Image 1 (cartoon, rainbow, N blue to C red):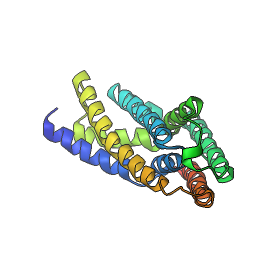
Image 2: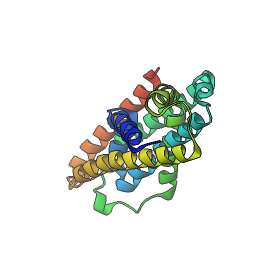
Image 3: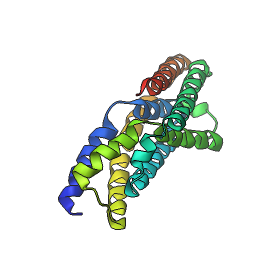
Image 4: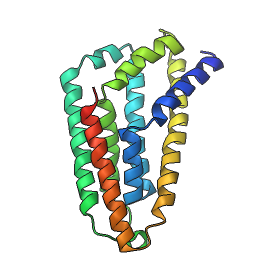
Length: 204
């Protein structure tokens, strides 16, 4: 696989990853509400799900995944339910300014990571994306080296996309200086999370 092919894949994947959607909305909401670590944990989960689909594509199993309608539907609804539940929690959370909040909850980070994995594994667009993209941009036959190169490009793109969203949301979080502002932002983030859950359910 030559450099021009990797650049073409990276540009196409960047458009896919940076487009507004449930993942990016969730990263923004989790970062504003729980800090950068919370948004990054979810982002790492999304990357893991994406790389799993890349591995499936490498072994020609994307088409199989695309046909797993029931299993993917279950994963999608489970992930959507989690987002909606988290949105409700954010909406009703106490108005505590960031400086007064407790340290990062490892269990919450773990749940955020798993949610990112589950939502991406349950996303019916992911296997179709690889079925449509890889043969036309990369070619039908992938070597082990090609898979590692594509994985590296995906990681690089996701670092840029996730990092950008986390930085943006972290700057917004600095404005949380009073309980009133925190309450307003919590409700905004909660609405964003519920919206992301509804968007996941509506995905076809």
